[in-house]
Every structure is written in C-alpha cells, then in structure tokens.
Length: 96
Image (cartoon, rainbow, N blue to C red; front, side, top):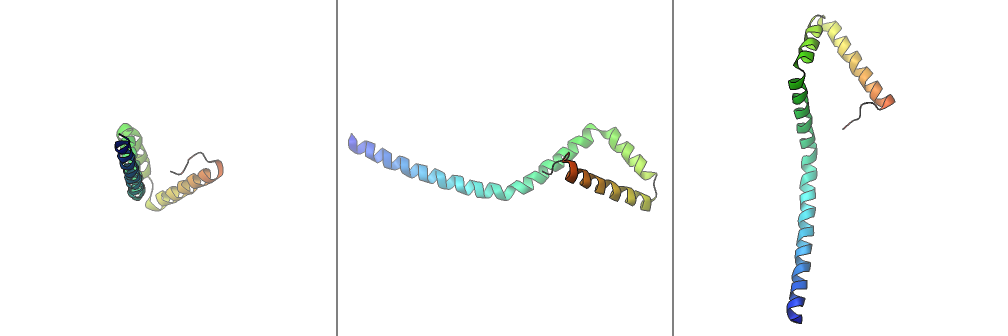
C-alpha cells in the first residue's frame, strides 16, 4: 500500500509541474493576443454605439457636411486637441 501511495505522489508532482508549464505557455500566448483583442473589443463597442445611436451619428454628419473642408478640418483638429487636453488635465476620459 505504501508503494502505491508513493507512486501516486510522484505522479501528482509530475502532473502539477506539467500543468504549471502549460499555464506559463498559455500566459505567453494570451499576452500576444491581448492587444489585438483590445482593438477588436473597441471596434465592437463603436459598432454598438453607432447601432444604438443612429440619429446622433446622422445629425453629427449632417452638421459636419455644412462646413467647408478647411473649416471642418480646423474643427476636427481643435476638438481633438481639446479632448486630449481634457484627458491630460482632468482625467475624465481614461486611456484603455
């Protein structure tokens, strides 16, 4: 009986070592995919936002279409700079 318990303990140690190695391999592979999956998640969130708010998107597009291309570019650059400034100063919008 003692011999069987010793054999089971050795087998348990081998299986635990193998499981640890597999977890390490999985964590390496998961880290490689994390950034790609983050971008996919952002894309899906943007798609969901457009699907849930079509009037807002169409209204913004119609308002934007009223401007000349140079004025529209100025507005876009100014709003982008304002958003970055708000993010840096107040931390209202967090970077993911």
